[in-house]
Length: 117
Image 1 (cartoon, rainbow, N blue to C red):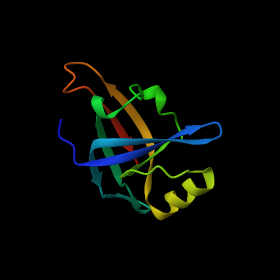
Image 2 (cartoon, one colour; image 1 turned 120 degrees about the vertical axis):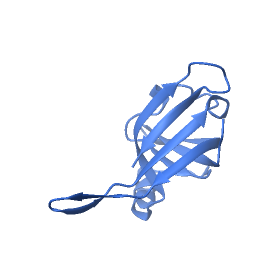
Image 3 (cartoon, helix red, strand yellow; image 1 turned 120 degrees about the horizontal axis):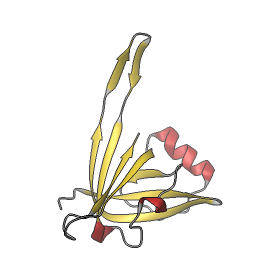
C-alpha cells in the first residue's frame, strides 16, 4: 500500500488523550470552501489511510473514540485537554469524524480509513 507520511492519533480517554504514533499512512488534505447563501464557509478535510501493518495494536475503529484528534507527523509528547485546545487553535490537529475498518482481503490491502476536519 502506498504511504506518504507518518501521523499521530490522540485517542480520547476519560483522563485525557492516549497518544498513538503511526509510522506510515497515506495523508490527503483537501483545502476547500463551501459557498452558502449566507457566505463562504471553510470545508477543509483530511482523509487518512493507515495500513494494517502500521496500526500496531489499534486494529479496530472502536479504539479511536469520538472526540479524538489526528495530526500529520509523529509526536510522543504528553498531551492534556488544554494543550489539545492549543493545537486545534493553531490548526495542527484535525478532529476525527469517521473511522472505517477495511480489514478484508490480503494483509497487503487491509487498512483503516479516517476522515477528519
